[in-house]
Amino acid sequence: MKNGINIKQLSLWALYDFANSFVLITFFLYYSQWLVVDRGVSDFWFNMTFVGSSLLFLLTVPVAGSIADKIKVNMPGLRTTTLLSVIFFSATGLIATFFPEHYVISIVTFSLATYFYLFCFTFYNPLLHDVAASEKHGLASGWGQFGNWLGQMVGLLVALPFAAGTITLLGEPGRAQTLIPAAFFFLLFASPMLIFFKESGVRTVIPISVKVEYKNVFRSFLNLCKSPGVGLFLLAYFFFNDAVTTASNNFPIYVDKLFGVSDDIKSYLLLGILVTSAIGAPISGWIADKIGLKRTLLWILGGWLIIFPLMAVAKNFTFFIFVCVAMGLWFGSIWTVTRAYLMRLTPPSMVNQSFTYYTLMERLATFIGPISWGLIVTYLPRVGAFNYRAAAVAMAVFVFIGFVFTKKIPEVNPSGIRTKVIK
Image (cartoon, rainbow, N blue to C red; front, side, top):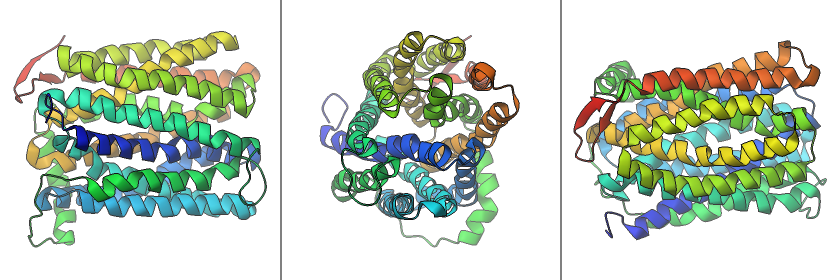
């Protein structure tokens, strides 16, 4: 390792984050609008795709995380879930392109694609241990997140000519044209990680009973939460990630409803956000390694408490652009720091389970955030897009709850020693 970081492993790890961001940005920007704007489906049903994937995740992935901790390897699981995710993203693109009248089936395939996409991170995030030493987890996580934001930028630029109709591969021009290329590039750029990454764990051959694992899943979760700070972290993450994820999933629709701008302008706005996100990721990781992961996370959450209300009150599009581009710094920071912080809090023997519940808290949040968002935009007054502005303010409330819980979590130094709670 050079200065505590294995450069080759980090490059492969960050390249995977680069790869998966192609489908992240393309499907959440163009599939959401194809379904809601082009096909006239309610926002509520788009958000229910995340609820469906969350239910599948809840029923299966905690057991998978427990098994992964016992067999002590992650790459076989990462390869399998990545390939299944690519298959279902491709199926969604094919339906949207050739059989748009069957959009209900695309909702099912998109839910399955999202499920396997999220499943990947149960195996991917714990590999941070093979990328960097503990005292460099913040910076390494930041460079991984940098790869994610860079991939979103490239994915957005690749998608633009397809969305604009400049390039048409198959079928009718339009937003659906962006989906199949995104799935292809996910597989293309993920392949080096899937083939060449060397994890330090050696597979342990032990008898595994899935039935027994299901019986013990609740007990395993309680044991995990007994580790100082882990339970509080997951609870806090549930709330603040709920707000950030829900807002990001609905961002293209939010901009459309408030300002009615073209897809090109939305794409350039997102590009600006992604640039500042890419800048914020490694910087926040470096800062977190210097001043502490918890202190950095509290500053990040404080920023979101300002950003959401500013988004809600913005009526001038120029001001809205300024808020959104500045917001990118916080987008780039939040998952950089939370990933490294949870790695620091968790006992080594429970890392897979810990990151399973990390993702599960994100998905369980989709029961509250999207439902709250959907109900607010459906039933509150729509004049002046008041309903969407109120939804943005509601997200600030969730962040505040998460902020309160975060203050109670102990700081942990690289050697694993808990220090006093920061007041």
